[in-house]
Image (tube, rainbow, N blue to C red; front, top):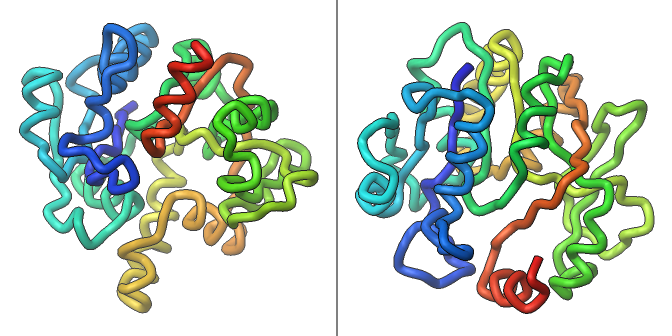
Length: 243
């Protein structure tokens, strides 16, 4: 198994001069907390790849030289899905865990994801409304996500109608080697056809696109705390609420 940590973006909403994964939460940065979870689940350093871009050197300085880095040189004009496929070009015949780098999550949830029987599964929080209320973003930053018999049937569209949302996409996903091959073909094909759209497509909208192409994506539900840092208000809310 390989791990891809998506950390190429500039974090424009945060308006900071360093990669968002270097935000310090307590005594550790987000990326240090992330790496600790993988270590707790016996993932070796050599199997962790930083899909980097913006100020890659600062991340290298923080985490050391035990990890692999694959830079998306066009990070300013592309999005995380493009960064992901750029990072897996040389990876063959292995399952992959891909994670955002601006989130906090638990070692237990990661373990549940790794152990899941599903070939393509992503972490989903069914109790997300409590966090989003505290962030004061319940109506400002809600996305569709519908689940039927543990299969995700739609996600990724902005909405203010929160009554029928079944959960929140967390940002950590496990994909088997065979499923990787299938979705890479779909991405490559559509990148050629619609380069403007697929260079900038985000993860949830890409997953929704895959679902429409009959790709099965299943939910692994979180039973622990997690948090997402999109902007400075999220950081302030986290500290104010002592979450």
